[in-house]
Length: 424
Image 1 (tube, rainbow, N blue to C red):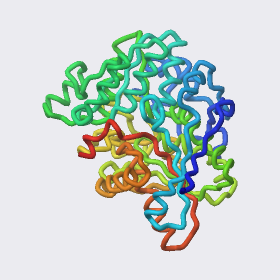
Image 2: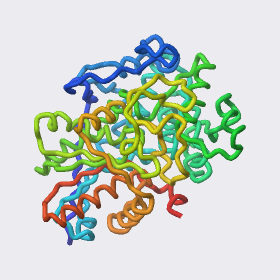
Image 3: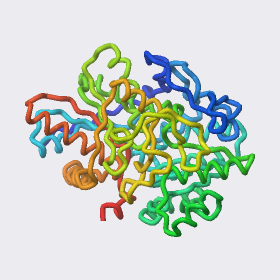
Image 4: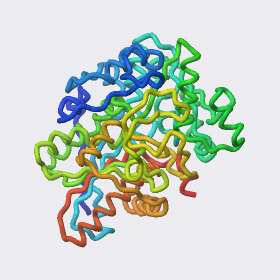
């Protein structure tokens, strides 16, 4: 019988603190700017969009932030997540590399998004907020926030990018199962949505437009706050449970990674995976971090590094990031969760400093990688996560040519059981 290495952790060893990489970076990140004044934005200005606890986490430079007991009680449903050796994939590729994947698809909604959704719902409920409004691309974030809202007694309203809303009806049904309200974006319910539909009644939408609709809705309703599934510092902070668990699990089997890989749209799952390893990189350890993005939305590989809005209508603070421009509308690719024009400021700065790398992948190579993985490893990956698999396969093939015994680790950030229409 073949050996199958699945590394689990006992519940009592669960991560109890989020890790804040800003405490260890040898540089200070460029601050967000007020969209009206172009001056450094104040916490007071952010309070119309975010609750006080989230603003506090966004600006903190404290190295470790305690995870509240109520959030840990929800994490225990699915965390720690397993680290699995992809031995069948290694055999298929005939590579000397050892390949491992951290599997976040075991969460209640099937992706890593639940890690920050539960945290954000908890803090907003504690601060007296009644409703959260958000956007979603492929629907994983909208599903996760709807689930978290149900757990902490919040109403959740979701603007879902139109092309994904049409392609992935099952995600819509999942949100509704958790009492989330979901509508396609652009919609007729906001002024900015009406403008885009006036230009094109069949507008495919984008994450930038959906964010604009969500924030416009929040600004009109004093009892609602905005919730974001990627990009901002507090989101990456919450996701560091992934990388912290990964570090422990690799140590349990005596493995030292040579390359860590994640798909990249806004930066949450990639950041959550690699950020806990940044101190080792800064100390001179020979480790690479690879962000994998679609060729059709090549933010890190072809974007400009500058200040830009996080949304299409210019409601959000200006962020220093790699961007394709707030008006960029990506093609109708099937990895809807990666169709974002910008990037997390932390990830962008790490790339600018040469501490991480980025590569882009055509849709055909990505789906071929997903098909191979489904057949040999027995898990159908989300189309977004398939970019990380494609990256791991590229690295494994390089290792075969160079005969290097690389240790390749990637974050399989979600399953694709509700994405079969994308495969079709």
